[in-house]
Length: 117
Length: 111
Image 1: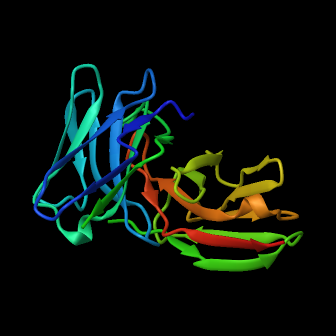
Image 2: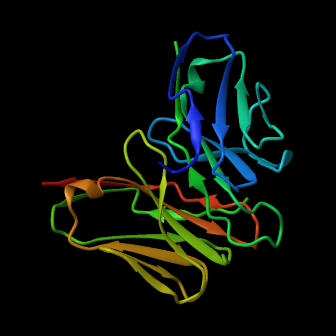
């Protein structure tokens, strides 16, 4: 157990639907990152939050949004789902996230596998 | 943005063989990390490197932070079937900045 909790582990839904993926970071970590991994692909960075505020955005579609709550858990919302959104979605957390705050060692959750039919 | 070129993309080896993989970039990094992802799981940190020239071991794994700060290497000795998975390198350019990940090396070990 890495200390980063992601739910649900598996999710099957239809095109056009909306889903929410949830992440609880490791205790003491203020930064949360979301990554997408499609079949046989690398880790595509989506978005980062630090202590409730958005810090960096990667290749995140406009149909996707995220937020980090005061208790530091984060949610990734995926809407108007398409077949191509089927992927593993990983949350990772780290204790740093601001410039000058040190080595950014990420701890990953086990992922949420989304299947869009 | 910055890119990390990780090679090889995939490797098929026999149990007991040694394995080498590397990551290179045109940019300088001040931290290098190596992660392993088992099938269907999240990446797990194997080794972290913080200083140019640093050589660090973790069991049968050894990683090095290149002297130029633009590359890193991971070696696995005497491979076993449970070494199967995807190995990712990751680099950090500045303190507190986001990690850049390589595309991964898919390792298959035949018993």
